[in-house]
Length: 608
Ligand code: ADP
Image (cartoon, rainbow, N blue to C red; front, side, top):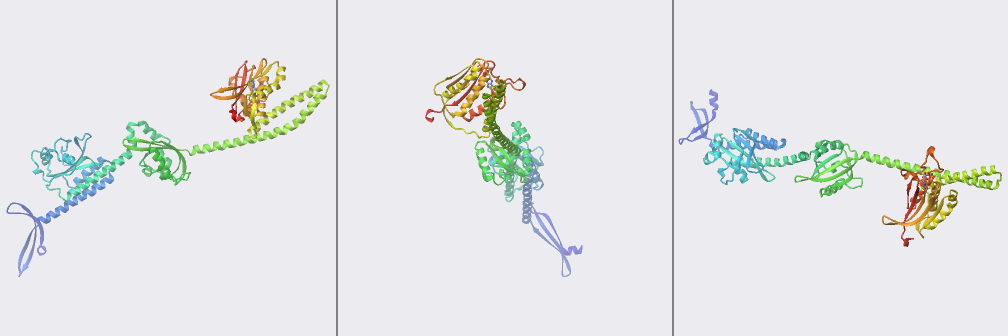
């Protein structure tokens, strides 16, 4: 005890002045010895000022704590509601406020609806109706803060006019001071933060700017939340109105990416799978991020995509092929369509990306197969042409000597045998000639020498050549020609065309006539020079019209075959006609006859 006294004691106390006011004091007391006498020395110091300063520091620390806690909450919270709850919590816990509430203006802006509150809330706050009064004290401070767009502070509610509706309520809840600060979003006031304390003069000049900073940070957070929410909600936003789109979006087999300001703001699962990135990695990426540096044409992916995007944003949907790069570095070809659309006031771009690697591969394979087939066909034709030539040369010898024998022999039996050799040889030669022609055409070895041919004269000549054969079958044959019908064609080839057609007409007609007409006609406003070979023969079933122009196809095939022939004649004829830029067609009626028409577009006279 003595020791303690030696060292002295120090304590604080409250003293009362003569006028009744209290003031804080610091009392230090210790035992001192003067000339062997012990004395207590007491020093009483008025510490009002120091106390005030200390309180100020304490209060500021409080607000600083609120500020830092709110900033942290801004980072971690994900929505407005969550943030409002956290702010109220923090203000009560760290800011030592009695009560805190946040209210938002409703859509019509005539009510403030409390969205979060903490502390001695009791049944306050209710919705506050905003009256049309400019008398500040008539209105709840929350309304004044919103109306005036600035912080409203009452540091002593006791002194507020007794007529105000809210004074009694606040005092009954033990609030002695209060402040309301407007909350803004996109530069518009959307709500209010209200703080209450059970101490008067709670809001000091140092403290108010800090609270304003807190309010500013909250407002700032609302902006970013909103952007995030809009981004995340791009598709959610569509959900309500466009359920179908949502289904397509999620189930599509194509990657669908929504971009805003060139950044990916939403995409379906297929996108993640196709590119091999996670959702977070892809969010906010750009096309260039998932493309090789350059596209196959050498243009920078970033430049090219910017151009395409800009055009699409200007309302012109784009379709193009693009090379992308997956996360693992592999490149792939895709077909992309870009379309812009409005979502509320936002202009979004939708990219549908289809992986066409397989399609490309298949196309390449088909092209390759086609090339091989063409090459094989060409080789076959060359082979046939060579073979036919090899067969034809000895045939010339056989035919020549068979003819001599036929003419020289007088023994009837022997003459007949020679005759069979001769006819068989002729048929074989004609077949070989057909094969040779077809092979030549297919091997692209046919050379045309075009000139202006008088079709009228050519037809008349050709008919003469078949008069004997027709007479043998009791058929009449004649040419009916307009004068000087001209065509720019190969004479020899046209001669063969006509000969094939007239030969068929004679072969497939049992009675009646064969007429070869040469006319000029107008078809679809175009002038044509046409040759028509008209017979009254057996006719051709309609379903054979196409087949008869194909190699080896005959109407009577197999066991029912009644006529000699190879089925090559019309195939060659058609190829000849097409080689000369003409057309061939058939009209026919079973049992009544057939008409084969060959026509060439007329060449203007001055070009002849
Ligand atoms: P073919 O050597 O068999 O005559 P084509 O290619 O010239 O070969 O003709 C094919 C088939 O078309 C013939 O077998 C025949 O059935 C039919 N055909 C061709 N011309 C006529 C025609 N004028 N009248 C009836 N049938 C015809």
